[in-house]
Length: 381
Ligand code: PRF
Ligand code: ZN
Image (cartoon, rainbow, N blue to C red; front, side, top):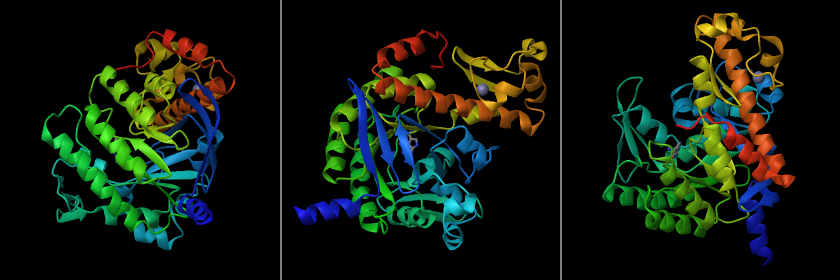
């Protein structure tokens, strides 16, 4: 028992304490090496070691707790060896709170149409010199050990949920085989948490096999992958509900690539804890602001003379200081336009995370959800 307990202590670099529940929804405290977070939790995506247009001080100011980096992008530039030599990504980008890196395979497959998956790993043409390159589970973990994030992701075989047939099954079993190679390659389990990723498309039998296989490996946390790729909402929520039901109560559950505010509310009701998506910052760069009623398109002519803030109920720095008319003028003309909109949109997502956490803790989660669902155009496409 004692040995087992010690093994448990030293093989996980996190603590997950559920502080409150409402049916399947949980409000928890997630203690990571660099920061103690509250869940449900939205994580902004910073591809190149930055959230485009925001400083790390601003990210702290709006209550951001974890940010995402991508193994694939960071390895291309500036390279994980250099990041390691300079003291790790936290120090390199001056971010003191938690970091998570994705394994890179998904980015290569979704960005480079030339990527090809074999049992060995993901092969692709280098965008730098066109040479063929191979990202194996071992190499992905090695790079992520160099980068030094609090949470690192297993290399998985991701296929679109809209595909059917034997490829889905092959990808799920390969993801299970690769997790063992990831576990064996992981050199820093005392300071970095390796999360496994559930695959299996929309097939409940395959998802079940994958959930059970990963749970057997007793990982510090689990992600639900392969979703938000064009499937209908009903299928998406069904898979999340099935996976959360099969995953351990005392470990964090992360739905990858999600998402829209409505999806986060629904997935949290289904027992998920963590989310990431480029949507709030990407849509900001196209001039769209997130507001409780849905979205506000600042490029529209009607904004040109509108003296109100983006959202009069939002306490963020942008809503305190700038009018829609001013933002209309900047949007797509000056980098400051995207920066201010990204600041507001991420503030909105952080406030949503905090509201979910507090409403679960305070026993008023259903009321909160109903208010959110009443905003008719609450972004859901
Ligand atoms: N796997 C990995 N990263 C991801 C996903 C996945 O399935 C998704 C979901 N489509 C987003 N990011 N490794
Ligand atoms: Zn605001």
